[in-house]
Figure (cartoon, rainbow, N blue to C red):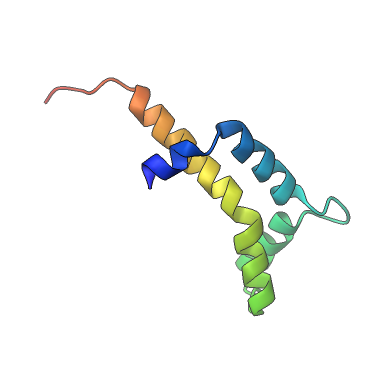
Length: 79
């Protein structure tokens, strides 16, 4: 998975995370709306669950890639 994730340019993930995470811009971003629904317990329709997955995936992939980059740059500690 790590090799596949590193084949995707970071800039592409940033752009996808911004646009899909914030779209539609009015009245409120879907990702924000679906996250509120998740915490309220009202996220039950399959279309809403799919929508949360679709809008959140680029952001999750970006976070995972940045974690991999950060962990790879840290020097290994001796025990």
